[in-house]
Amino acid sequence: MNQAAVKIPKVEAIPPTGAHVPLIERYLERLPFEPGDPLVSLQEGSTPLLRAPVLSELVGATVRLKLEGANPTGSFKDRGMTCAVSAAVRDGAKAVICASTGNTAASAAAYAARAGITCAVIVPEGKIAQGKMAQTLVHGARVISLKGNFDQALTLVRELTDTHPIVLVNSVNEYRIEGQKTAAFEIHEGLDGGLEALCIPVGNAGNITSYWRGFREMGAAPKLFGFQAEGAAPLVEGRVIEHPETVASAIRIGNPVRWEDAMAAARDSRGAIRVVSDAEILAAYRLLASKEGMFCEPASAASVAGLLKYGADGAEQIVCVLTGRGLKDPETAIANNDGKVIQCVAERGPIEEAVLGDP
Ligand SMILES: *Cc1c(COP(=O)(O)O)cnc(C)c1O
Image (cartoon, rainbow, N blue to C red; front, side, top):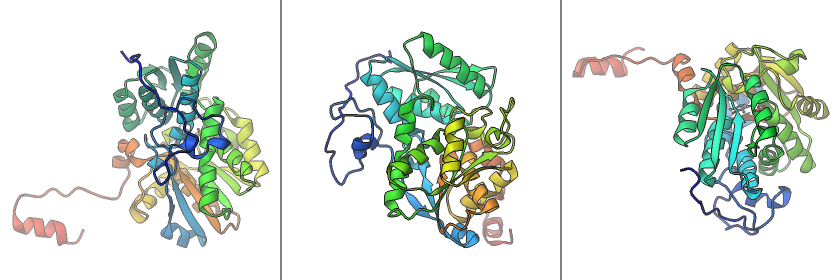
């Protein structure tokens, strides 16, 4: 049913001006696409770069937030997915597959639906945030819940794609890295090359790899500070973590695909990859929501937790990447906030007390 012919638009050399432009068209000359190639886009990219006054005050520098949750499916994965799925369609693929902690699945499912091709996702059993599962299912992907962790899921899909004509859209896929590097272009352009340090969560380490590639292509070299969660910090500990654990499910990864690339990005940019605890992640998560008005998912808050914990080596222009949207993970939000719901009868006096009385 999913296979009904879908008319897929083509990449245009000169996209319409003024409008929000698909990422592949905006950066066509820097991406592995040509005019006339199939374009599977949901108008991803061109995300806001928001000043963070409270954080800036706390850190003593100008801090901005790159709001990757503003992408169509709510995470930066869309930047890579528009490229991976457009290329898959160009190359005649009828199906894509990924192992996912959630956001890759949601994004692959959406872009596959748009392209009219089949999508299968393998997720670690019981470890997917609810919003991401909802997206993946509603877009019509085939969801396989694996009795195992993410790293086992990835090993299995790699074996499958070696023996079947299905395109793997995890961040081992080069098109993912190419697409995601465009976020670095946007920051570089937005700050006129003035960025000094970037703080970013690290899971499979595809994104930090992409940013470093993007900055280098712009001739820029900000320091990259990557942050892993304490229970899932293979790059910091220098060993594979068999049973990664953290509240930040999007970075619950014990054996990153882009291990060497991430270490090189940190080293060559004179940055570092460091560790933050779940308590620090959740404190940053609440601070962002309650003081900056920005609701991101827990993994995203690792970037801010790391900045608050370690500083940014004297940098004055800092960007923290907020990789995904808070609504992805309602369970964690409900369980971690300082608010409360006040029960009240439908009468004037009690309402007045509830609204205006001491909390
Ligand atoms: C995928 C993801 C990450 C980790 O990115 P990697 O490329 O795997 O390092 C961080 N935050 C969110 C919200 C994600 O979806």
